[in-house]
Image 1 (spheres, rainbow, N blue to C red):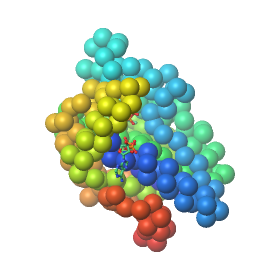
Image 2 (cartoon, rainbow, N blue to C red; image 1 turned 180 degrees about the horizontal axis):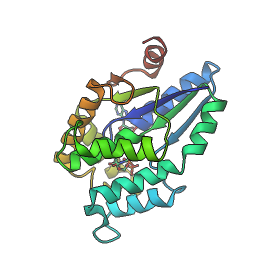
Image 3 (cartoon, protein in one colour; image 1 turned 60 degrees about the horizontal axis):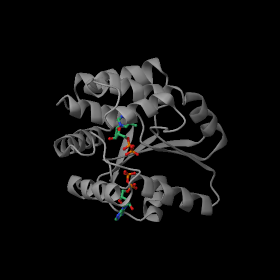
Length: 211
Ligand SMILES: Nc1ncnc2c1ncn2[C@@H]1O[C@H](COP(=O)(O)OP(=O)(O)O)[C@@H](O)[C@H]1O
Ligand SMILES: Cc1cn([C@H]2C[C@H](O)[C@@H](COP(=O)(O)OP(=O)(O)O)O2)c(=O)[nH]c1=O
């Protein structure tokens, strides 16, 4: 049975870059690693609908915090079997965003903290009703919010296929999401959280196996 690890952080924090480096490091060391990025764009109709809403389509869908969270959650509900199969066949299953993204972004949108109603609702829906496996570890890529926002803006400027969405372009929201993420990490929400900045993947991989 593999270890389930979720990497979390703001838009532009560097999650994708870190996950790619970790997978590369572990595979070079002979470990069996499987990875998936949420939302599963192109594979999940609910993920695609959520992205389209965040880019201005589907009327007032994006105004509903619960409706948006439900779309992201349904994408994961549909992935339960593939995650369980991956855990059975690999040493490590690495998730680029997971349930904590829904908890942090949705709570932040409502001005709530990590102890509020929205985090409870996400927990009951995704870990309770949908039966998603709880990560053994969470990794919070906690670069300063200003840095993450600059990187997300830079990426959008360089890549015309990745315009900033509603959440990425809302600086106040990003600061609030950052605060909720840090509370989730401090309270070790659902499992142990490890915080990292711009750390070499090799160093982080060692810390993940030793702490
Ligand atoms: N450690 C780093 N130092 C500088 N730039 C970085 C670093 N990590 C990622 N980036 C850059 O920041 C941008 C966002 O990184 P990405 O991994 O796509 O973030 P996320 O998946 O968290 O949105 C990309 O343009 C990437 O090249
Ligand atoms: C996975 C997930 C993402 N989100 C948010 C975080 C991001 O701001 C946004 C889009 O996800 P993101 O991973 O940033 O996708 P993109 O490649 O389009 O930048 O959705 C949630 O609110 N809940 C979730 O469950």
